[in-house]
Length: 252
Image (tube, rainbow, N blue to C red; front, side, top):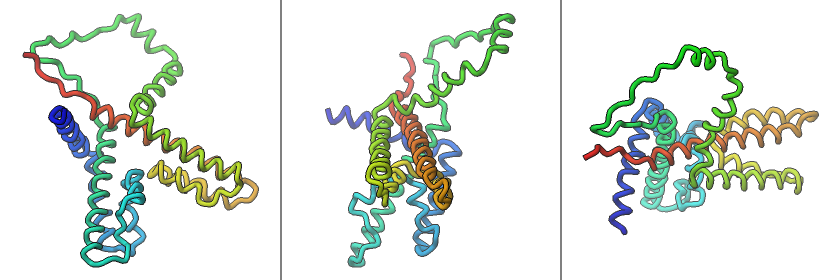
């Protein structure tokens, strides 16, 4: 029913805004974005004019497929509308990214219902405590990694994003290994996994200038882009978890 769907959207929108402004990490990101957006409008010819696109990636690159082109040769009123729409789009992308960072920095709340008794503290037996302290920490590392990567695969939003990343990487590998004409094939995984993929490009580019190990540049770029996509998927998964979580209601 429309009323029921609307009642679910409003709390999720409220949680999205709370995540985007409820902690220092998200607020710092929004402050940096606001400064970069101001720089883009005040100094459009500056080298930092494109920084809002990078800060709001990868969502901001979807604007390439939308009718948002403030640099087109159109009338004054239409140009103002295009610039305003482009700025609103960047703001929405920044809010989503800030909410993802807020989800990373916010621990899920486990509220105790009203009327329920809080659990008593647990005191471990001294022998059990010694066994825990002397246990090999290497055995828990795979479990920690699994828990860390679970948000990237336990929801449709993150899985769909990983599918897009896989397609972009497949196009790059096909152009690099099969067609032997990479051209601009690397732009698709670069845009899909931005902004972290910018670091992968910065690391792999100097390697390409050495003829003896030029082949290693594609390997470094592929690994860096794949890791960037995984980090983005984890952030999207955490955001989806926080938005899907239900607010605790006090017992009647």
